[in-house]
Image (cartoon, rainbow, N blue to C red; front, side):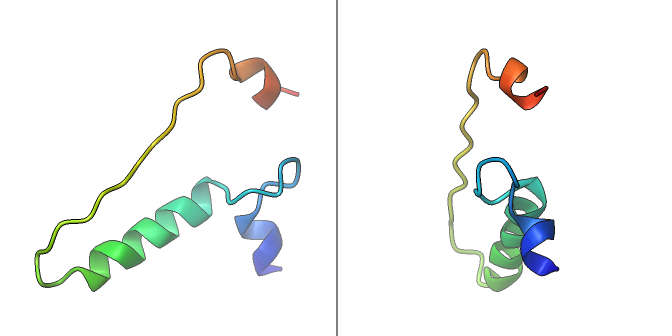
Length: 52
């Protein structure tokens, strides 16, 4: 199931796999060399939540 492969089961948010697939698509569409931005959020102290 595509949804299972692209959505985190705990949070229901897009996962790393979906992020990189969307990034790859954005880069491929940007053949004209225009600018685009990628934002990444790093949450301190979040590792214990991920380890659950």
